Length: 104
Image (cartoon, rainbow, N blue to C red; front, side):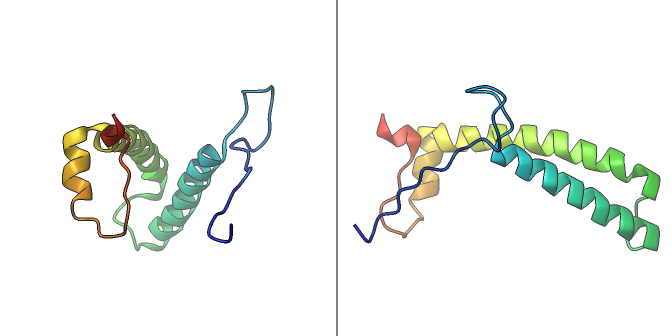
């Protein structure tokens, strides 16, 4: 039993109802984009970024929308496609690797 870790973590930060509420990964996205906005705005004001300080919000919004949508879709495709899983996991030497598409 020492080699196993069993958790009972709730995926929700808090609940509005049984299945409705903000999740931890959503909070992580909000904190990441908020902190990157604040950091890039400070860097732009000091002249360390090639971006005007009033355009930082537009840049972060574009990165958030396209990055999350495109990255989420590509992650789904690469994690569920048989061919992509076979190519990706043949180079892995960390023991047993499971791919969701390979279980079919």
